[in-house]
Amino acid sequence: MTSPTPQADFDSPWKEIIERYFPDFMAFFFPQAYREIDWKRPYTFLDKELQQVVREAETGQRRVDKLVKVFLQDGQETWLLIHIEVQGQREANFAERMYIYHYRIFDRYRRQVVSLAILTDDQRHWRPDHYRYERWGCRLSLDFPTVKLLDYEERQDELTTSVNPFAAAVLAHLQTMATRQEPAERYAAKLRLAKMLYQRGYGRQDILELLRFIDWVMTLPDNLAQQFRHELTQFEEEMKMQYVTSIERLASEEGKQEGKQEGIQEGIQEGIQEGIRESIVDALTVRFGEVSDEIVTRLDQVEDVDTLRSLRRQAMTVDSLDAIVQLLPETSE
Image (spheres, helix red, strand yellow):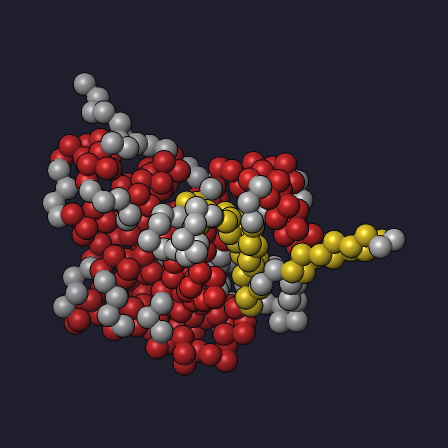
């Protein structure tokens, strides 16, 4: 008998894929904003600054919040802050929270703030897009663009032909929601999506990242998860794409998911650290060629998971291996 389908974790994978593919995120969901941003200039995620805003606001449970500094195409030294919320369930005070965060970000930076919302819940008619109140002639209003992922159910043909990585992410999300009580159907859908990544012509690193997102979101019972890895390995061999490390990374992420659900134990923590280190080395190898033993040794000394995740993001964007070396601790004597 097949085990029940495990509860999917949406927040963490959405947070990471937005960071990894931020320009693609904007192009896919908010094309007008994408066209007005100067992508030749660096954008900056202000996670620590946003966390301070969140702590001060104290509006209840936080979802996936991202704050990004970007520059515009107008040629002047102007920049604005994009506040992104990924909301996974109906929340009575969501619009109020959008306003509070918007105002607090503005108050801190005195810069224009654009608040955007991605609604990943299953309540088709819940579509908050503004916060307003009025009393005695005093009016306050904030309107914010929202994207409802359920609306893409009627556009799945479009999603299957798009090369934007968020097309694959939305497909994975929709299939996860549609197969909550059907592990066998989720297995079949997950395998189709995984194979589609190889057939669509993505590069190796993109396949690794998107496989990781799909595996993280589309959780399976242990027996089907093992079967999925076996089937995908066979498919890789048939396609003559020996990305075996992708399967190994999927396995390491299972430990990460278990850690979130059951409390991270020492052995799981070590597995998470090692999996992230391997992905850093893999990214550097793809971009710059062979990675020296010194870098590997210095990377092994980094144990903090948040620091490792930051290094993984840097590995995907730095201009040279020397730039990564500068971020690593000196080799212990």
